[in-house]
Every structure is written in C-alpha cells, then in structure tokens.
Amino acid sequence: TGFIGSRLVASLTAAGHQVIALVRNSAKAEMLPLPITLITSLDQLPVESRIDAIVNLAGEPIGNALWTEAKRRTILDSRLNTTGEVIRLIARLERKPAVLVSGSAIGWYGLWQDQVLTESAKSHACFSHELCDAWENAARPAEDHGVRVVCLRIGLVLGTDGGFITRMLTPFEFGLGGTIGSGRQWMSWIERDDLIRLIAHVIARPEISGPVNATAPIPVTNLKFTEELGRRLHRPAIFRIPDALLRRVGGDFAKELLLGGQRVLPNKALSNGFVFRHETLRSAFDAIL
Image 1 (cartoon, rainbow, N blue to C red):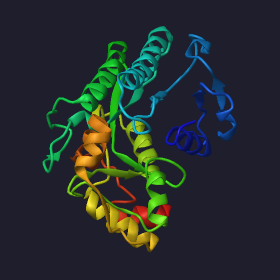
Image 2 (image 1 turned 30 degrees about the vertical axis):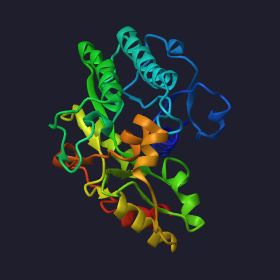
Image 3 (image 1 turned 90 degrees about the vertical axis):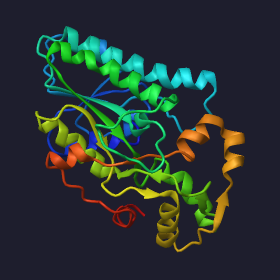
C-alpha cells in the first residue's frame, strides 16, 4: 500500500496479471484496485500456490525521523524480518517463483562525493550501506532454491502523491525554497512510473540478476534540482539551509540523506534494453507537477 507498491499493484492488475498483496494494515488496502487477493501473512499461502514473481519493497521509512538507535533498529528489522518471511515462503512452495525482486537503495554505495557509481562500484561504510547490504544479503538465500534474485538500488523516487518531493513543495509554494547545504551534493532520482516499468522489465528479463541501479540516466546536483523545481513551480529558489545547522540538528541522518548524495548511473538497466521515459528532471517534473 506504499508510495511505490500501490502504483505497482495498479499497473500489474491493469495489465491483466493476478496480484497477491501482503497488507499489514487492512484499512489501507481499500485504496488498491480490484481484482486483487489480499493476505495479512505469508503463512496464509498454501504450498501449492503458483507464484511467478515476488516483489518485496516493504520497510520502515528512513526519511521521516532522525536516526536514533531505536529508529535504526526499526528500519533494519522491518526489512530483514519481511525478507526472511519471503525466503521461508519460497522454501516451502512446491513450485518456486522464477524471480525475487527485492528492495535496496543507492545508499548501498555510501558517500562518494562526485564519483560516478555503477553497479560495479565499491562501497563506503556508513549506516545507509550497512542497512542496504544487510537487506540485499537477506534476499540472496532465494538463489539456493533456484530463484533468480534482483536487488533494486532505488534512488529518490519522484511522483505525484507521495515520496520526498511532497515534503519539498510547501516551502517552495511560500517562496522559501532553496538549496540544502552547499547544493553540490548529487541527487540520483527516478520518476515513479519509470521505476514501475523497470520492475516489470527485470521480472521479464531472465538474464538480469544481482544489483540493478534504479535511477534515471541524468542525475543532478541539489542546486540544479532546486532551480528546476523553482522554475516549474514559478517560485524563487534563493534560500539555503546551512550545512553546519543540518549536521548539528540531524547528525548522520542529515549527513547521509541530505548532504551526502550519490552520483549513480543505471548501467545494467540501459545495457539490458530498458528505455527511460523520463531521462531528464525537466521531463519528470512536467509529468508529475
């Protein structure tokens, strides 16, 4: 029922696929399109269930609160516990799914400043890397059951009714938009429907496995991002939130999510024939704003 999952369900059902949705909060399930099968636990699926693909994006949001020790544990546990449940489901199914598409994020790479990062890049140690690496490792045991595993390293997802962009709109609407820190940090983004199409693409392509960068081909700096958003909203983008203030108030949360950034390129998606509808930020904003 999340920002990405709800759109994925709608797209799959509209294309005629049979979707089973694991829903923790049944009240949120009312927003999902019919026809759909709802379950509240993977244990409800019998061993003879015929499932072709599993998409696992479940996890506690990382950008809605400071990273206290309790928040970090909740973020980590929510991902590892659900992924563990998925692996146990695969183990008991008589007919194994062909593929598991499991969530991850570009935070896997850590903080690299201006260096271009493809799927072959190494990582720098930080909480974001620790989180994403543990999440990817939790999905890999599916390979022991003959299941192809794809880990989507997702960037900043742009869409109309959720995600981080909605939190940026309010200050811009009041003329208070602007850069975060120096504005030189990179923002590797992807338009939400391109992400949904990429999920379908990796499901359909048996030659794709391992990590896949789910970001548009043209990342931008925070300065360019705020300038383009201001242009599209016809609002100034002249304010700047000081780097030192963010570090003092936000700690690692600010350092990794707001001030760090990654310059990520989707090499594997492009080399395997995926075509982005929104390669540029201007195209994405024109579609969603």
